[in-house]
Length: 58
Image (cartoon, rainbow, N blue to C red; front, side):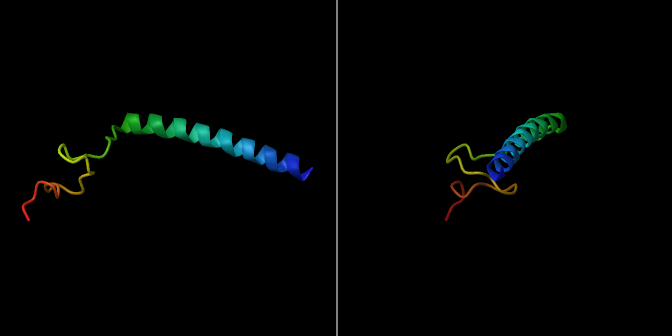
């Protein structure tokens, strides 16, 4: 009996996760959310508006 309850709970959670991913992807497209900016030279994520660490002179 406990095994049935646990397996049913896991199946319900998996279905909810699939619907959540579908919903978040449509919301992000509707709002125009862009992917994070990356440096063209090294491929690191850019934080802020300044130049990347690979472009700065040390």
